[in-house]
Structure formats: C-alpha cells, structure tokens
Amino acid sequence: MRISGADLHLLSVFDSVVRNGGFSAAQAELGLSQPTISNHITALETRLGVILCQRGRRGFQLTEKGRQVHEIAVDLMRRIDNHSMSLTALKGSLVGQLKIAVVDCVASDPALKLTEAVHRLNDAAPGIRIEIEIEKPGGILRRLAEGDIHAGIGSFDNKIKGLSYTSLYKESHSLYCGQAHPLFSVPGETITQHDMDKCIWVHRGYWSRERKKSQQVIEADRIVDQIEAQLLFVLSGSYIGLLPDHLAKAYLAAERLRKLPPHEDNFDCTMQLVCKSGAHPKTFQVFSDMLVGLYRNRVRTPPRPRVLEGDPAAI
Image 1 (cartoon, rainbow, N blue to C red):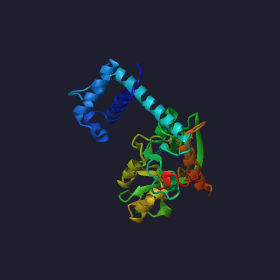
Image 2 (cartoon, helix red, strand yellow):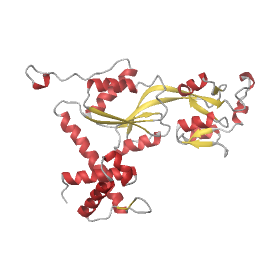
Image 3 (cartoon, rainbow, N blue to C red):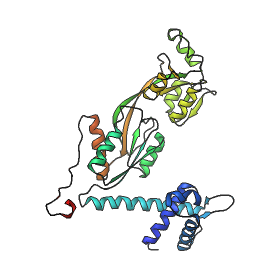
Image 4 (cartoon, one colour):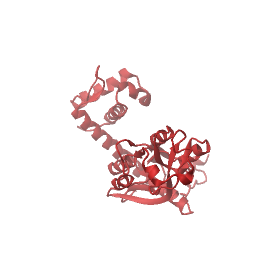
C-alpha cells in the first residue's frame, strides 16, 4: 500500500491511543471525542485489513498485529521528523524537535546548567521545540539507542556501545537518616560504620552490580527506581540511604534529615551528556555546544538570520 497523508493522521491517532493505554485516556492529548477516536481506529483497521486492538469490558489490549503496526508507525513518524529537520536545515533555519531525557531529582542541583542552556537556545533559536522528560538511566540509554530521544543527562553505571558520553560535573552523595530514625539524635562521634551497616537501607535498583555488592544488600532493604521514592523511605525514619547532597539540603535545614558520619559507600558520580555516536541533527549539535560550553566557560551561540532591507520578514 502507498502511505498517504490521511494514513499518517490515522497512524498518529493510533500511536496516541497506544501510548495512553486506551481511547478515553487519549482524548485530552488528541482533543477528540471518544467516538471520533474509535472511528479513526476502525478506519485504520479497514485500511490495513487487520484488527489492531481489542476494546470492551476487559479494557484496551493490542493484538499482535496491532503491536507490529504500532512499531512501524513510531518508526515512520520518527523518520519523517528527522527528514523534516534535515530539509529545514537546508534553508539555514534552526527549527525542529529536540527531545531530552534527564534522571530524576536534578532540578535542585545548582551545578546542573540545563536550564540555562534551554534559555539560551530558546533565545537564539525559538524555532526549536524542546521537550524534557524524566527517565531512569537505563531507560535513557535504551531510548537513545532506539532513536526515540536526541540526548540524555545523568550518571550511568551501566554503559552500552554505540553511544557517546561527555562528562559535565560531579554530583556528591552521602548517607542520610530521617528525623524518626534511631541514629538521628545519636552524637556523630559515637556512630561507627558498623552501626550504619546494621541499619535497614534503601537502594536504587539501577545501580551496578559492583556498587550493590559493596553495599551488601540484605533482604530487609528496599529497592527503588527513583531518587524521590528513596527520599520518602529515608524521611519515614525506618531506613537510611545514599542521597544527592543538593537534594538533601532543604530537608537538612528543616531538620527532617540528618547527614550521617562519612561512610565508605559515600560517592561522587559523574553527570554526563549522552547521545548516539556519529552525525547528529543541527538542532542537537547547537544544544550540545551550548550545554558543554557552559561547563567550559564558553558558549557557542548560532548567528541570528540576517534580515535584508526590504525583506517582508523585517516588517
């Protein structure tokens, strides 16, 4: 079959339904009524000659062929976006989409210069549409490898081939307990490492095997995938955990957390900008130069388009 503009529209509706997990959940994103969305999916099924999903009392479920069609649709729309940016770049305009994924709980870190880079990029190239998502380190690497995002920022214990890593800055982590924890009021000079090792810890599930092994995880410990979830466990007073110092700062001031004496597992992680190896769209290259330049005390700003006298754009 030859894919038409109408087919692309139907496929984009189908993608929204799959990502949101059903017709009703996709309404807000699409701005369409549930019956209209249902009619679009029926039209796509008729066009393709396959059943894409089951809908009814059991809820929304993709068929096997529906899953394959969705994979094709996502790949097709991604390719169209990339080629659209390449065609636009021929005109010398910096426009297009820039998708960035960042690990959680970094907004409180003054060493993170992402916000400044976004501000500068918006000022220099307002035609670039920037999207920022929160993602686990492993998810960032997977989505980069699949071409779903252009850049990721985080610390990566488990690296994969085919990606390029640029070091930005260090993020320090220390051991903390909550106000209700037995160690909260114990004089620091009397707390030994053995005392801390006897406590129940909360760890991050995406840490490398080497780090987990050094921390001697036991059955009573808790494993989480988000730093904020880890923080909540520590604040409960039942667990201790390694938290970013910048995140803990406000809770220390409010006396809801206590920084425990230095522990051998305290660490500094290297925060990195990661992307696919090889050539990149101009939009990403400009962003990368700006962000990395902020850590090298220099920023490359793309020149603004020169407006010629008499050009309607100058009016």
